[in-house]
Length: 161
Image 1 (tube, rainbow, N blue to C red):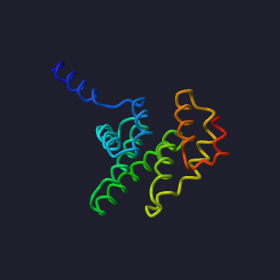
Image 2 (cartoon, rainbow, N blue to C red; image 1 turned 90 degrees about the horizontal axis):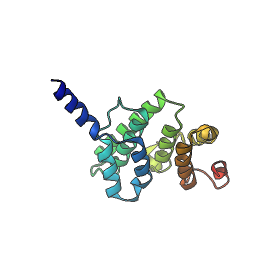
Image 3 (cartoon, rainbow, N blue to C red; image 1 turned 30 degrees about the vertical axis):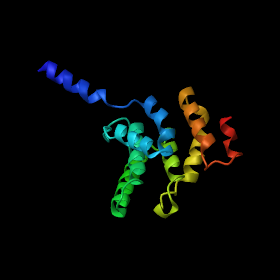
């Protein structure tokens, strides 16, 4: 019985992506449908009870996946599912800068017709105010995001340089 439990635990954790690998993949997901589908597949195993940053990336993968739905109704349902999940993660961890960055990256790229662009200014301000307090790896990741972001002007990007 112990062996069976050990094997089940090992199998359940073997496929779970780690945060470092997700951070590597995330900036590339919108560059091709293949990258997007790979990301969606990697995030499918994340449950809503996992690390909240991973859950936020899962929400982003659902939002991204909605783009590839064929039927409009399915597209809208999938988009709403991802947005609802992301908002619930942010409600639970409103001071997490990486989760705010994920929402900003989504909101700056979705079509205006979705109505999901209301937090851009708020998230920009949060990232700008809390950037200096982050650790080195997260700071580098955030810097890369800010420098390519279309939400920050060239002048606003100076805080990361």
